[in-house]
Length: 152
Image 1 (cartoon, helix red, strand yellow):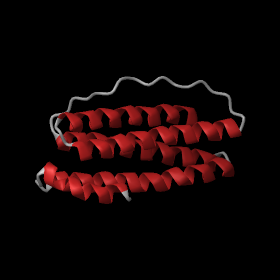
Image 2: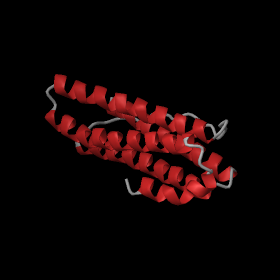
Image 3: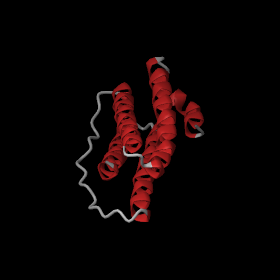
């Protein structure tokens, strides 16, 4: 399951790059930076999983990752794509935590707790970004507000 999660994290990495590119094309540079940073974070999550597998002498092949779109109807569609991705990842980590409990693997279960806490933050961030976009605020004027999303 962790090997499959590497692909999920790297897919999220690519998807966030696609969203960042969409915002950059709209000249919304601060929005683009927020999603570019999110992409970097997803790659770091994949690396964290790889280190855990390596530290536990698990041999694995890196899974393939498909393409990511840069085409969205609007900012709300970008945020919805990000929120859906985070929701999917949360379900995956919950399933892994449950499997670790069932297999009596305390080490894996403990490792997964960090990700579950991270997912809570990520889903909350996407909900707040969705609310911000849905408020109808001018996205250029909203850019200074994005600093609070970076700080957590």
